[in-house]
Amino acid sequence: MDCEFTEKVSLLLDAELPPEDALLVTEHISTCTACRQAQDDFLRLRREIKAYEIQPQPPFAQAGMLARILNSEKLPLWRRSVSIPVPLMILLLAIIVGLGVWAATLRRASGLAQSNGAPEKATPVKALPSQTEVVEGEGLDFSHYDHGERAAIYKVRRNASAAHTATDSRQ
Amino acid sequence: MKARIKIISFLFLLPLLCASDSAFYPSGKGLAAASDEPRVQFHIVAIEEKGTERRTLSETTVEGPAGTDFNVELQDGRFSLVARFLTDLLSPEALKVRARLNTRRLYGRSEKELPLYEEDTQNETLQLGFDEKIILLPFGRGGDERLLIEITPTLSEKSARLASGGLRPLEIEIGRQSPGGAISVKASKTPHRFVVEAVLLEDGREVARAEAPYLIEEARELLLQPVGDASPAVLQHPLAINLTLSEYSMTRTADQISLGFDLYRRDAQHESVRAAIAQKWAGIAELGRDLTYELSNSFPNAQGKKYELRFKVKLAAEEKAAR
Image (cartoon, rainbow over all chains, first blue to last red; front, side, top):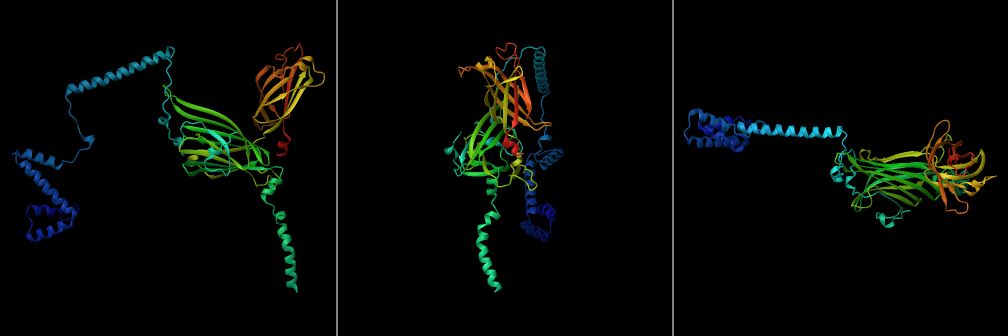
């Protein structure tokens, strides 16, 4: 909207321009993307206002409605609000506090059992699959070579082909 | 006239120059072959293999006197390999390579969220010709995409001595470094060959002895033979020692080496019958000096006599020559 003709577009739509200027602006709109966009926006706004004009509203309501239409862009998530009835809010808070107290009680009981020297219950070892345990290191990542096999070492003739295993001669 | 003399002289000298080329400019190979102090080069290349495609990840050359050892190490966030190679030149055509592979792989986590590792150790001894190479597969043979490390030995063409007369030190040349240094090579040169002398003393008198050449980190049995006027206890039950040398360290005033041994009493009549006198004994010996163990409490039928086992570890002659 940085074209100097943009203001005249509004005047053109309102038929407030002299005929010479109107012709000039009309020709300009055919070549200027910004002014064409402005014309579309003005026309859309006008259509929406007309749609609201069907129901008679008090002047202050019309002004509010117009402001809402003009600010009809989507609000970011952090600016939106949700209205919750007060009893529901109290219930949610009570549930959260209850869960916190329950977790703290469990942790305390576990700590007491260990400090009293109670034999720790033997738990079976749960070995997670190695694929899920990849720790990113610097440089090469060997994980795509690793299929869990044992390392192997052998000797070959120097002129042996890439298929080393064919001439494997383990000592 | 002068020009004709020059041409005749040139034609006369030309065959002499051609014939004497090798004498004036002997090839490095000739030098190395003629030298009593051969040097060996190991070309170590890490290669990624995908089907028929091969990509070089790192490349290192280790060059040093015969008996140069090296480590190839791989390390990332969840896998590590330390491959130690002890090398010995058996002849101008053959090498003995003793490889020890230690792998450590993150396997998962316990219920307590502690890391669990899968560890493995392998020992392999390879007799290697200079027309052969070693293939090390850190992750085994499987998979379409695999990592392999090729180790190619050659007799070095470099002279063993510097112009100053001193020994040429070992050299490591990094041709291509792996990304992030995930693959590394280390090399060192320490003596490998020793002579071990073991003597059994009875009340201070030598009654049995044995001497044998030893290679570091390789177990060998010493059989003590009775000498002089050994008592019947020694004659009927000669000793056998299963001994291993390891961890050579250069210290003052004398270099040191660790030894570990098991001691057995044999039956002179029945070779296969053995009784253990001592197991997993160990010590640190200074080269060329005595290391003595008191056996009186362990020796059967000692009958009040004092028995001692005395070791002396010396550098082998070829190691002395190479210093």
